[in-house]
Amino acid sequence: MDLEFFADGVSGICAHSPVAPGRALRWTIIANPTAGGFTIGSRWKRHHRALVEYREKAAALPPRENSGASEAAKKFAPNPRFSACGFIPTTGPGHGRKITEAVIEEAASGIRSEGSAAPFHLIVTSGGDGTSLEALSALYNAPAALRGNVAILRFPMGTGNDGADAEDLPGALELLVNPVRLEYARALRLLVSPEGPARSKGPFLAFNILSVGLDAFVTHMTNKMKGKLPGDSYKLWVDIASLLYDRLYKVDFLEVRALDEQKREITAFREKLLLLAVGSSGHRTYGSRKKILPDYRNVCAVRQMPLYRKLLLKGLFTTGAHIHKPESILFNAHRVEFSGSFPLLAQMDGETVLLQKEDFPAAIELADPVIPVLKLGAGHGSP
Image 1 (cartoon, helix red, strand yellow):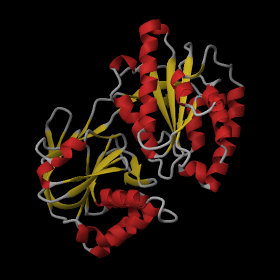
Image 2: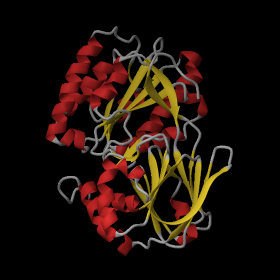
Image 3: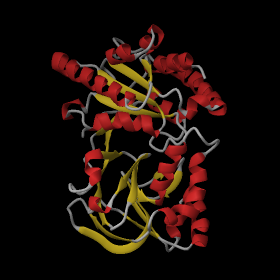
Image 4: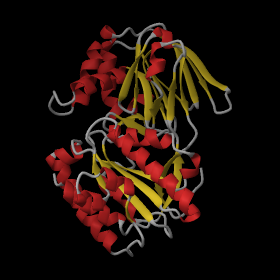
């Protein structure tokens, strides 16, 4: 791993990027140096090659005028070399959010002083889902006036990368060397009873998948054992959960009611569920590209089943073939309400919380589209 090479490479690409043409570009690269994309040798070699290739592509583009690292990046960077590149290695939980909040304040200050001529701020996260979750949570709460002046690009530098903007680094770098438009992505919110103990731990936000049940247990145990087990601990806990989950957590009936954006009921059912997963859209993965939502539908519920069926179905989540099995219930919804009488783990893009029966009724709902992201294609959209 060579953080200076990475910083120089991404900064050099940004210096020629056609993002936000006609405006000064300010970039901030937030990187988790302990993420697998930096520390796993085989992955780092692929990323090294990609940076060499795309820096050459960027060099053929005109250099950006009046552009460079953000003032926030210069403030947080640990040395002058990184400061010049706009590169900030994170030092612990919450650091990514703090940096993003500083970028938001800088962007707001630019609007106040320069109006429509204010620089465009690009935040590049280079880590796993935790790094992007921190930055996205800060952006979710940013003032509406900033949404056309800031965007986030999430590099897949972690071990899971389900929330990244591309499956691999070359795919993400394409967004820096080609004309792009600004789109606005949705977040997911977990809402709990104001009388329950979880209320004080919120707000609960996700930007990829928010779910309850067995997969949240897998996430919880993976987080607890991170760094203590070799290899893919998520896959290990999927195997263990198939055997142990309903011995540790009661799998009983959940009352589920789904609504569309106009608050009209789509479906309602009462089932013993192993998991209930809601995506910010369809075609979503989690757990290192497990295709829990492989088509246009953004909700998947899986009924409780005998052990032999669990062992059979767990492998199907890799390809998305589980949706053809009778245990799966899939549909589209804007809001999914659920209630039970037993403790239930929830996970939000890899962060978990234990819901008690006092936290019900609870709901998972789509928020307004407010997260500015880059998509291939010229022009800028509007929220």
